[in-house]
Length: 311
Image 1 (cartoon, one colour):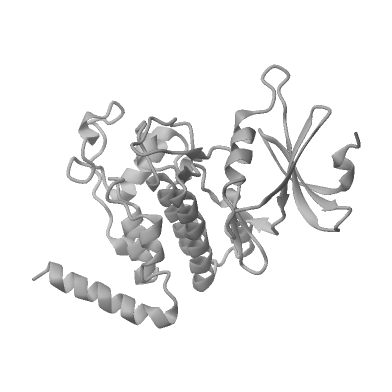
Image 2: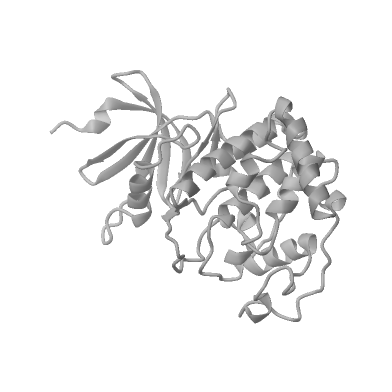
């Protein structure tokens, strides 16, 4: 049998990690440029479960804001995944604008596409569980693709216990930091909010150097949680009454100079109680992501709702 790898010409290495190596490559037959992800195979355990999970989930997630899995190659102990190629990841994209910020309308477009992809995943009961700039791909035309589903997981209702060993530290939701086994779609939404804040502020909002350091960074910004803001937190095995009693900063302090509608969305995302946190679906109908012609009716509707609740 011919080696299917001969159909691809490696151009250069574009990434490397625990999983293996990613190459920019050319499909010789079609001249199409692709991303060729070589998966490290353990002599004892074989193909990693993360790779098998990624293949299984991506085969059922066909959407313009989710990276396409084009092929799977397995020949003579070599295992590769072939993906459509994007120009860069969001981390690289953000650094291109340094020391300036990503333009506001561009940040909004990226965030909207990211949340659109997340809503598609969530509507099919899939959690990504590792949303971070390096796993959000961006093309020069501004199109966004969610990538790297190695930590993704299908979920059911009612929820079953899930592992806490997920999500890169700076983008990790507080329920995971506090060991909650029954988390849900809110973990991805929290991560998306961290990304939006990073684009608008030019730096990550919560920059802990350890799990307890990350908890402290979140508390310093959002206030130390109480039963009123996070029911059950006082009984959590990780929570301590000796935590400093920080008060949540005002919106102006948290998001200085940020557009009011964007700051409002971030306020709704950075909520401790995951049952009260805004969902991807709700974000997509918010004033922040609506087009210019829809904003007036959106604002009018929200003002009307506010008036009714305050009568």
